[in-house]
Amino acid sequence: MAFDDAVAVLRSWLGEPVTVVLEPDGTVMDGPLSELDSEGIDGAMFAVDAQNTTGVAIALFRDAVTSSDQDDDELVVRQGRMTVRVTCGGRRSGRG
Image (cartoon, rainbow, N blue to C red; front, side, top):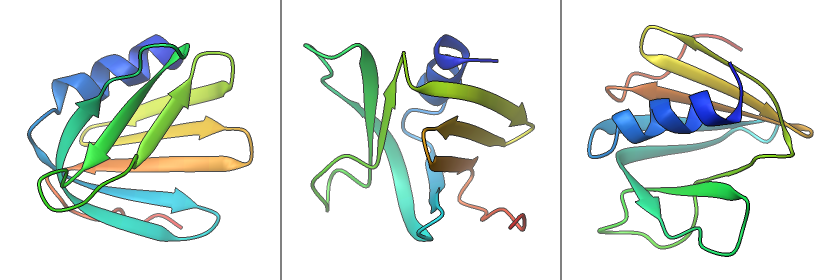
């Protein structure tokens, strides 16, 4: 699984409650997932709880994603030094 597959999974979860965990810094965001305009970049951007917050929660770049894996309701994307864990349904992954 790579960039296009990861984006397809995230798009299938639009409007659903998700929990996003950014590693290694441990940032956690919860709320409905939405896609942001990514015109001008070779990537995709997503927000969490865009009704009440501003900014990009997930920014994936085609040439930077090194791997992505999906296991049921969890998507794990590795990009540079960051790992992005997205759990659909708002249940935080117990993985560390």
